[in-house]
Amino acid sequence: MWPPLNRIQRWLVVLALALTTLASAFYRGRENGKAAERREREAQVGGQAATARKEVLDVQRETARLDDGAIADQLKHEWLRGAGGKGGR
Image (cartoon, rainbow, N blue to C red; front, side, top):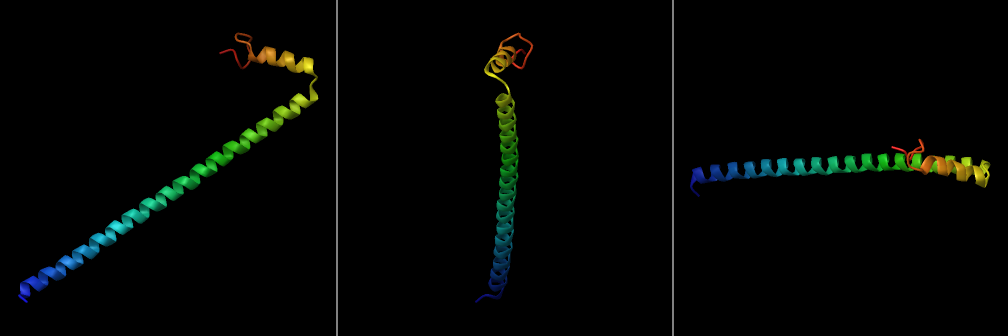
């Protein structure tokens, strides 16, 4: 074969290997980033779920110690518009 063609072929093979290496490193890093983001999001959702469970238990404990009339009064006070409770914005 013609010697300059052999040299060009070798450089093309080296270039192809370098591009393949770069592409695989890019996609591996991208997948690792996605996995890290997924783990972070799952941890955040888990924390929000724990907070919600705690709040539910707090409300259950609070309502368990009140009688029906006190619960009705509290709901009326907090949920009516303009009553100054949580519902009044």
